[in-house]
Length: 330
Ligand code: CUA
Picture 1 (cartoon, rainbow, N blue to C red):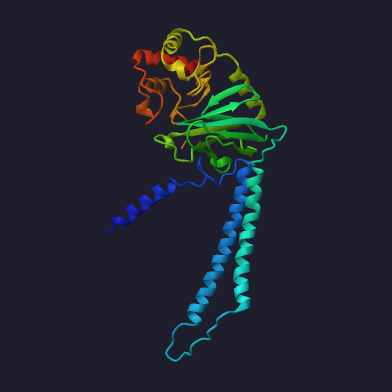
Picture 2 (cartoon, helix red, strand yellow; picture 1 turned 45 degrees about the vertical axis):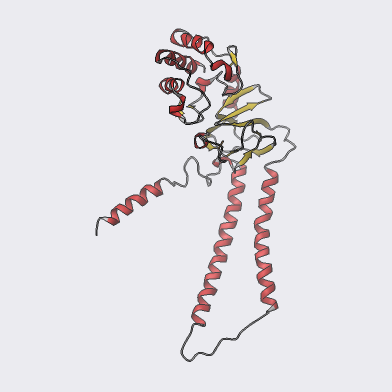
């Protein structure tokens, strides 16, 4: 009999531990003006519904006790068609809905303003099965799965979908917004908290939907500028094993899908020109280490089910060389 409670407690601890309120995917950790606005509405709704709930339960309790059946109690007054009551329970919910609707609609419009702010940084986000492409058209930078943003600057995110519907969602930075083929959606926000924020595709888009993750790195303007300069520079010419890897890469099917500036120009898969500067592999799924990259190019399906990248039939040696090359591309 005594064994169950500790077990239940342990299970509850594990369960609650998985739901840390301030985790990397928490919606109540505001990292942008957008998320702060959402939290504001969330607080209004929570407080308002708590007050309404408390009132309803007090009235309910009173009615249950006051008008309960007693042996010699008379039948309470029977009311039908009370104009004042009817009006009040129509007007009061309407007022509550209005209080919730006004800030909600304001935020919806403000965060998808079509006329871009003049000093805004524009990023085109494309959702692909199952990875994210980030293009900075004014800066001439294209990267994947790790979005760098300067803190405190207005960011205009244009969402485009080349294949199926995805949804761009970085909880610290705000609400979800769908990426729909043939449609132009926009998200405008100002990142406020430097650091790494995690994101995830939030619309079921096929086999590896759950593995369509991203990282957003919000950094000081100077650090962001340094990152841009690095992304625009040509990576150093590889030597040794990495040079062997470059030659394997150039002779393989890799070049049909991936771009590496000066080496290949494929557009169906992530741009790898500065792959070594990214911290993760396969859309935020694995740490970007030479061992993981070698395992990835050897059998991508084993690391990410459904991935569009085919098994290229590389030997272990070739995979190691390609991994050395790709991780050298800083
Ligand atoms: Cu892309 Cu789910």
